[in-house]
Length: 471
Image (cartoon, rainbow, N blue to C red; front, side):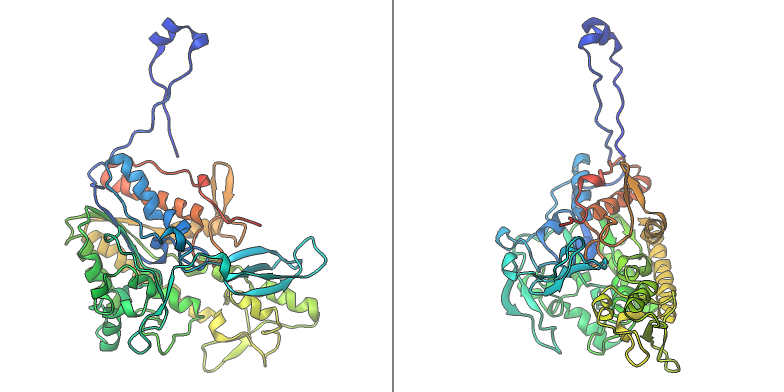
């Protein structure tokens, strides 16, 4: 919240006359406290990079929470902050989802580049075909690919960021397990972490050519001489597993829930490295409960059943595959979470009978939800202990996102919540924030920075940042 105070100018008022005087306002006081923002470095995953609506593009990078923080730090003697943007002719980066409206049944029409769909939008009577034309994007793909499996992922190569090492080192998709080659004692996993530049095209684009496929993330960030840092890592140590319906992928060594031993070893090494063994100030953020994001809340068992019963009033239940060996198919309950990508599947009738259940990788059954939440609590305990060990601030994003999920947040008389499409805070992928959501997150970091370092960094006004733009 911005605060202003009237200057004590009453003698001048008397001299100039009341009719001619307007109250003069002071700018809010800004003080860096004991922090040194002259070289701010942000490390983390897609949330740090500015990922939105299923992709990384300049509009997201420019309104990432580190970019917003750096803008506020600059008012407190903060130094230059380099964001790894794409060239203007490639400004749409990897591309992103687009929203075309709501159907008469209330379902959103959301298309990735190259996708088409025929739907009747609300308020209309005739179906239309919508196509998200790839030619409308300025992509940053080079036409080459990363090395093929098993040494790489074979993903499309993104244009490298060739200037000086940026200050925002966020890498979409990265976890603690994949960031640090010392985290896991399993040679296959440790080796994949060291070769991560061959697996993740977002990481590869940040690496100098000589480091691709041979340098892990911890080594990479250790080359940066930060005077202050933020670290928001760990989400993908549970989220990758959760978004795949609690199903680990045999070919992906980072797709299961990360065990606590490996996470602790990797997380401590990452914080020790970026903080120069506790001599550099910073803040870390913990892992939100995945069940609080629209990816797991936008499609409910009740809404799917209601859809089935519109077609067949006698439809008894929604049927799902589970990870249980004794009950591999059963009727869903409200404790089971259906994922956002399942929406297009259930629209075809999948899940309406026990012989045609919703596939396991599109549902988090109740047992999987419990396992993920238990692991999140364990990993957050490690994050909190590490913050105390290296004497840095802790942003409790888990509690904050729970508050948002329960009651939303009012900003300048505008209601914002975790609702999909109309909640203002989450983008079209149901996991990553909008620019307004990132501004809200930046303010949470600022609160902890001010409290930890005796600083007076001013928050931003989130309503000045875009929410989801409706057609």
